[in-house]
Image (cartoon, rainbow, N blue to C red; front, side):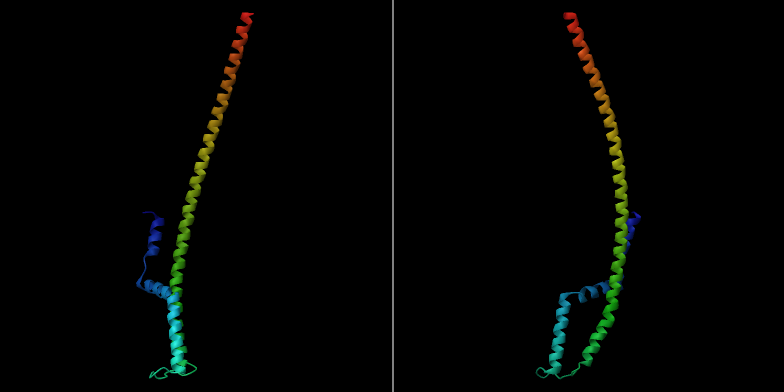
Length: 154
């Protein structure tokens, strides 16, 4: 296995913490989460301002407990999302490095092929020149033969 393949495979192995961070980032960064959270916040505000049925008002305006809950959520999700993004950034850097190495190899192969094609073109050009010179010789011989035949017939 090449060093490049090992690097790519190593970046794909995730610890439990990385898996959790990725799942949290995936969940928190979705419309599904935003809609559910927005619905819960609206419900919270309605229950604690207007009231619904027999549900007691546990967090009256200015919703200090709601602010505490949202601050708590932000305090924990932000670093978890950053961990996921940092790992993703590291994987992207490794992938970019691998892409660069592959591109350099491809560039070297293209240069080799181009050199080979140039050598082939030079050989073909020499062959063409030899063929052209030989055709000139044959043409001259044919003209000489015709001239010598016409001289003999006269």
